[in-house]
Amino acid sequence: MDQDVKTLGDVVDIAKRRRKYLIWPAVGVFALAVMIAFVWPPTYRSTSTILIEEQEIPREYVMTTVSSYAEQRLQTINQRIMSTSRLMEIINRFNLYANKREKWTMEEIVDRMRKKDVKFELINADVIDRRTGRPTAATIAFSVAFEGADPSVVQQVANVLASLYLEENLRVREQQTEGATRFMEDERRAVEEQMAEIDRQITAFKQLNVNTLPELAPYNLQIVDRLDQDIDRFNNQLKELNEKENYLQSQLASIPQDSTNPDKDRLRELRVKLINLESRFTDEYPDVKKTKAEIADLERKLKGSAAASQDSRPDNPAYVTLAAQLASTRSEIESVRRQLTTAQERRNDYQRRIATSPRVEESYRSLMTRRNNLQAKYEDLTKKYMEAKVAYGLEKGQMGERFTLIDAAILPEKPVRPNILAIILIGFVLGIGAGVGTAALKEFGDQSFRSAEALSEAVALPVLGVIPEILTLQDMARIKKRTVVVTASVVCACLIGIVVFHFFIMDLDIFWAKLMRKMPM
Image (tube, rainbow, N blue to C red):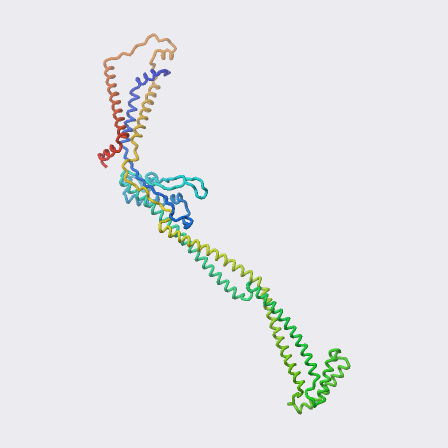
């Protein structure tokens, strides 16, 4: 083996010497790649593109109740459509994977369709965010594709998947808006029932504390002030009437009931004198005692005379007038006393109401605070309920954010796999690499010497002679046969290269269509 490859001639010598290790692996790998490229069953792909459109009515006028972003909603919809039940329905409908059902379980088939054959891709674009004013990436559309061996089935499945996305989006949005509307309505009714209950409690509380409610406190204070004034007025009236009564009594005592009986006049004089004495002295005073004794004697005397004439009445006009005035004054005194007692009782009652009002006000304020909070909550829920109803109508009319099919799945005319050109080119490169690698391994594994210099360097002895290569007739025939085989191989490779060039560069679509018509399906 040569220990050092120094020149290009050495490489050429190695290539000549190992040409069969260069050619046959390269031809074998290249032929295998060509066979794989043409034997590999074609896979077709049909794609539907769906645009995400904004709602028609501006959001300032109608706010939708669907709060999730398009990307999040798409992922949710995708998970629902990629569920096992949905995919099994499609598989059974179009009889997909008929040749694999005997070998694979249904779970494996569904997993194959979900992970490999169905392609879901988002289409993003740079837009300006309305809230921040900065450019950001937004999902404006998405594509759903299906891959398979039959072009017509692939197209139908892709259209079915696209329709499922459209229907699921409408159903999800309508379901969300309907759910929001129903939730708001239920909450509004619950708050309405709570308001009715608190109203009943307020009514019962008012009936129980009808006179001590906080809003009656100013009125109660006003009534107390007025009653205080009335009491003062009644006391003044009573004082005046008492003074008048005393005056009339004193005047009446000084006037005889009739002018014919001197004892009566004397009795009146004594009574007036007694009144004057009692106003100045006590009952133990001698003059008081003497006057009382004389009055008692005259009264006994007059009683004896009065027994004979019980029906006699006072005939003195002045006495009668004063007696009438005294009776009227006493009647007024009784009336004023009753009014004073009533006013005092009313004042005590209103003072009790005023004293009880703070405690009642605290409970009443608590009830009214709950009532006001419920009222505010009810108004807010009513507003949101009306907005939810409008949003539900928006979704029912399909005027909200919606999916629009802008590019329906078409019948694929060209398979996406295999890429024959790429496979052949890869086979060509791998063939060259295999040939070079095989030749290199063979060369480095050969321990023979190809020159006298290499032998002399290896054994450290001089070479005395070199025997040249002797070619016999058999060797010449073998060389000619090998040359013919190599030339034929090169010609075949050139022809294949020309066909590939024509196939992929000149008339690819026409050639493939002709080939498909000739191949049995």
